[in-house]
Length: 349
Image 1 (cartoon, rainbow, N blue to C red):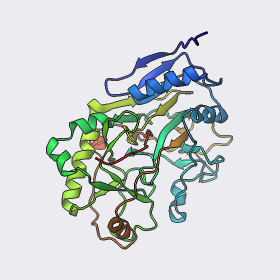
Image 2: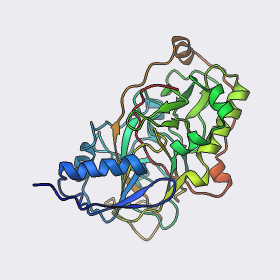
Image 3: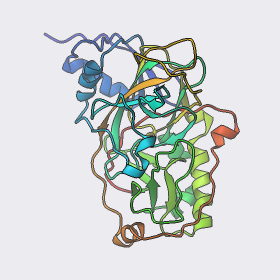
């Protein structure tokens, strides 16, 4: 007897994103349902499941259908205050919130804008999938923008693709939301990794641009001024409005990203105002705008190591120059938030 799969898939934009109906994430899913979701994911990159009042355990169970669950990335001790909170109680879950209790944050990354970024792109094994669940919402702001990096790759001029063929770029994270990492000194204790500028998605075989404004800081083998200019051009291509699906969150809304910028998608977070300190969280009060998000991710496969001369350079004091890269989205008054993606590289192009 054949299993009947009654799942409705509705595209949300011409860039990426689709809403999934006919699935109850509080219950275990059949193999057929998981297969149908995977097929929709491959086509639309970002999936939205509305009206899902799921527990943390149910979110973890759903994520486990798609691969090994990754542990929360731990920031180095000197940067840990930017990425930890007193309510982070599970190694496989990241709580993102602007709420403080007795002056201490309950989760990571607080209030404010979050530039477009690739989730964990600064590691050898970036996340393959990210699963986001909205617990509490601000009265305004906090939307998440997902950019289709397949489209971005296609829009890169042929001459620039040829120039960057086989090149790698430095991805580095100082756990800031809207500011480039400082490359003027020793970066050996700051999480970083080199990845190809262009990659081929191992599942779809399609080429994608693997660069983001927040963490991609330097192209190998290119002088500082030229690298900055090229990266700014690539940032702007990846942030074109026609490549973006902007997700407006609602309570009990669940979103799953198959690589925001992580392989085929990129995400940005809109500014959120600071909330008042409240007890018994997560809970919303009338005194401020609250943002609480529960994030789970599956890591991708390990990418090749950077060339020895680049690895040696990254472990020594560097004089790359500072340089600014203001967010084009911010200049245009657009609002960012983050999305994670799927990142399991096979090779650079």
